Length: 330
Image (cartoon, rainbow, N blue to C red):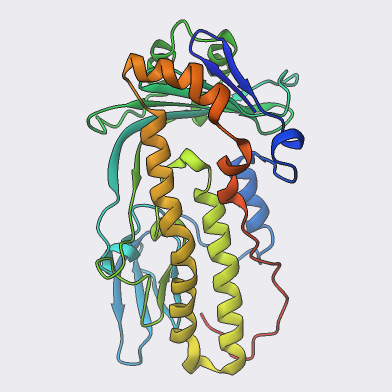
C-alpha cells in the first residue's frame, strides 16, 4: 500500500509482512464476482430486469410480490438484497439513505496488452479531494476520485462528460492516475453520491419482519471508505444461510426466530462499521490547508499503523456446509 500527496510525493509505503502479517487486500471486479456467484445457481434461478411494483402480506402469512411486468410471486421467506434504494426496505419502514457530503467518480482502466502496476493499493490525498487506484486483473485497474460537495448534484449519464470532469478535478496530480482514466472505457465510468444509513437501536426498524429480511446495502448501506460494503453483504449471506438451514431442520415455524437471530448477530457488526466508515471518510476529506499539512507530514508518515487500520477486516463467518432442505421455501 502506497500513500502519496497530490504533487506525487510519497508519504508512506506499507508492507503487510512488516506491519500486519496475515493481512491482505484483494480487489475483485464486481462483474466477475456476480457472475461467479450466479454461475453456482441453476440457469433459471435468476430473473433479470424484474423490478418490484407492490409488496403485500396475504392471509396465510406469505409475502406477495407483484413485478412491473405483472408477474406475481408468493414467498414464505423474502430476502431483500436489492441495493440502497430497496423498495423492500422502504416497505419495511426504512428511510432513504442519507447523503454524507461526498461524491465519487469510479471506473476501470483497461490495458489490452497488460497493465503495468504492482499488485498494491495506491492512495493520493489532496485538500477535500482524494483518489486511488488498484489493479483488479492483468488487464484492468480500478480507480476512484472522492470529492466534497454540498449536494449530490444533477445525475450525469454522458460518459464523456464524466471523464472530462474527473480529469479536470485532478489536473496536475500524478500522471499515472490521469493515464488510467484516459484508458477507461465509457461503459465503466460512473459518478455517484455517497450515502449511508445508521441503524440506531430502538429508533431504526428491525431488519426482519414476518418472513421478510434485508441483506447488504438494502439494510445497512455504508460509505466505501473501509472497503467493506460488499464484504458485509457476503457475510450477511453466509450468516443468514446458516440461520435458515438450522431453522429448516427444526421446521418452518422457526423461520421468524432465525431471521430475528440473524439481525441481532449482524447488527453488532454492521452498525459500528457504518459509523466508522463515515468518520474515516470525514477525516480523509479534510479541506483546511493547515490540517492537511499536519496529515501529510505527521499523521500518515509517523502515526498511522497498518494493523489497527485493517482491524475491521478480521471477521470469520466460517464456511457453509451443504445440507438437504426438508422444508423447501420459495
